[in-house]
Length: 224
Image 1 (cartoon, one colour):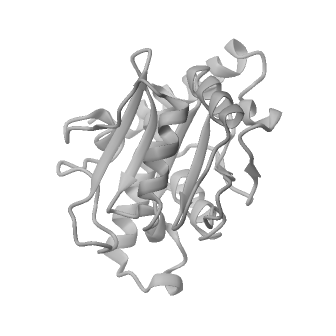
Image 2 (cartoon, rainbow, N blue to C red):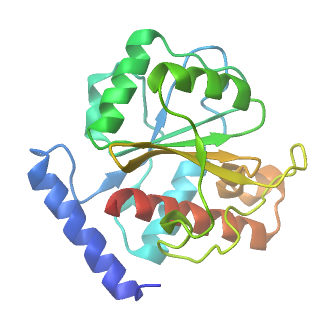
């Protein structure tokens, strides 16, 4: 694994280069933003998740990350201001054809979508992905993929934070033009591990693992 100082330098260089290359689209401050989706699912749940993750990433990886509760909808023009979007929920999700096309355009332009199944999202999420990328399948990422080693080492892949159906956690991705544009967290629910400790009562070691894996995802998305 790269030395911490070298990784921080790399990230800073990448962020600065993105700011110039994308005509001001990105800056050296990364804002974590939620994706609001239709269909009735609770896209808004876990309001402390992103702020806590941002605080952890900033404190431990030295990246200027913030989260203020902002969200965007798939057709918002502002979507192209954000390199990373976060999507989570328990219930149904739905994208119109226009929304799916704009999400595809955003991802192909450099965006990265982190989707977390908070239990109950899986069936509809996989269905709606067919609208975004009709000719692509979710691929389970091997444990040696860089996303599991970009800052902290996770030799066995995603940590298991909540039991759900008792299945092993899996990390799936979609690649477009050779780049990972979407990472889907299934049967792990790392986002619940980002919540305030009082929300789920997770032991410190689980919260630490969830926050470290979240850091890996942020780091990976910014340098790839």
